[in-house]
Image 1 (cartoon, rainbow, N blue to C red):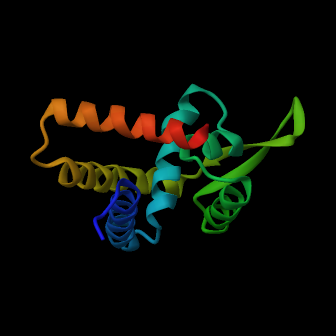
Image 2 (image 1 turned 90 degrees about the horizontal axis):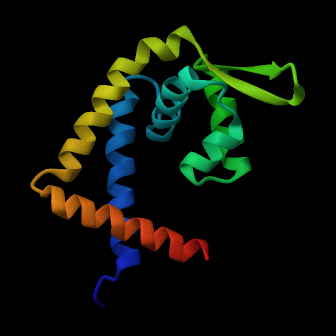
Length: 141
């Protein structure tokens, strides 16, 4: 059987998760925790970051995000702070531990991206991003 787009995306996703988890293991993080931690650290400078922001940015369900964020809180990477205007909302605040790990996380993310895109031209990368954006939109509809 010939490999179709969905299978190739699955294979690529599996390889990327495996590499990210291996890289982040030495920091006591999973690949997805590292990306979420980095996202929170970058975006909290512009204002509060909420769970729904993480769900939207990473295309994950509420229950998946809840589980990951609870573990990150348990591991001392974030704290949840109630928002004065709405007690139901909890702002995700990165801890000093997260800030300390972020330089290494950022370097691992950069290295992984560099390895992933090695040998691809700017035109190929632009076409890839355009293609996966369209494929993602196709699945949303």
